[in-house]
Every structure is written in C-alpha cells, then in structure tokens.
Length: 267
Image 1 (cartoon, rainbow, N blue to C red):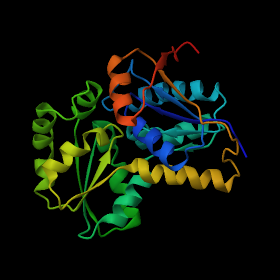
Image 2 (image 1 turned 30 degrees about the vertical axis):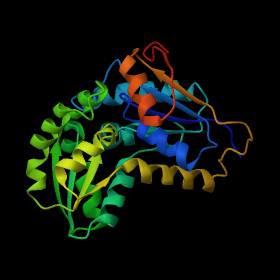
Image 3 (image 1 turned 90 degrees about the vertical axis):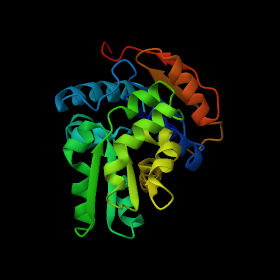
Image 4 (image 1 turned 60 degrees about the vertical axis):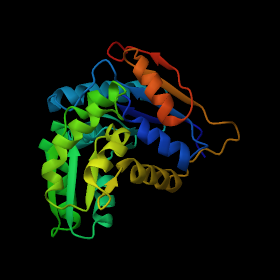
C-alpha cells in the first residue's frame, strides 16, 4: 500500500475533470493538483515550450513526493509525453490513449469527431491512435481554440459559449459523426453546450473517465493503492491566483476549494 498522493496537472482548471473522476472512483486517494494558470493556454505554444512548462509542473509534483503524475492535458500528452517520460523516474499517465480507446469502443458508425486545442489537433495524436485500434474508422477533427479561455472565464453555460460552439462544430456535425472526443480536459466544462449543438445522436467522450480507470489498474498492479483510514487530502496549487479557478472549480467539483499560488519556474 502507498499513501503518497497522486499528482495531477494541467495548464489551468481543465484537469479538475480528472480530479473529479479520481474522487469518484478512488475516494481514498490523496491528490495534489497543479494548474498552470499563469501560462494558460498551452494549446497554441510550441512543443519545446510545452515540454519546458510541463517538466516544471512535474518537478513541482515530484518535490511533493507524488507516487505518479497524471498529465491531465491533451496538448502535453500529444506532443511531450515521450520527452517527459525520459526525464522523470516516475509513472506518468496521459489522456490520449484512454480517450481514443473509449471513442473506438463507443462508435457504431465508425465516424468519430475530435475537438481539441490547435496543438493537439496539429499533432494528429488522436487519429493516429484511433487508426491503430481500428483502421476503418474515419476521424474528423477541429481545433477549438476559444473554448479554453471561455472555460477559464467561467462562461461555460452562456450564449457566448453556445454561439462559439455552433460555429466551431458545424463542419464536424455535417459529417454525421456518432461520437465526439472532448480532446481537451477543459471541454467537459462545456459538455452541456456541446451536446446541445451536436444533438442527441452524438455520444460525447470525456477521456478523464478512461484515464482514471487506467490509473486505478496501474495502482492495483503495483500494490500502490492507499490503504490508510484517514480522510483523503486534496491540495490545489496554481501558478497565478485566479478567482475564476476557485469559483468555477468549486462549482464543478461540488465542494469549496482554495488554491495556493506557487512559482514553479524558480523551484
């Protein structure tokens, strides 16, 4: 048994979708979450910069003695996972493979849509994994760069969000997909809006669900589950204070959260 915390990081509050699923599936696990709110979004940045930023995030988590790190960012998982794995002697779990597998298992028409940041879409990470799993599947993807700032501003269920989603999703909707991968951990905050735009015949895939199942299996396989009896501790850190992070995060998680601001660049 291992009572050390699970580390989770993202460029902002999007990774709280993974935290929420961890709380549901593994309620006894301690968690440390880091949101790089000073440098959000990652999606439009170069691979080298994303790798640099995310390595600082992981170093912060390593210094707090986490037993594994969940890269709750599709942009990092798509472009920097291999580089980060070579840097750290720590189990790392990304979100691309679990999300792609969930989509392949869900589709009936073999027509899948993928939305994400420009970095994730340009990497072609999802189509590559999906086609390895089932080469017959057709994948239609779209970068939705304004979704992250909309979520970070706390505007997920507004007319602005709906009109933006309607514009972004019209081409994928016209392709008659039956499955849509929310290929950024911010996007489940927009799930109601996206579902309204896409219609009832399209299943939305949140990679956080399968990612946490992968975390659970990894902990079971390594005898790493927390066997303690104490109430789980969840700590939240950010690189720049954001009232929206705390307000939107508290609303999403259904509990009040308070985040401590830290400087990961100087650690």
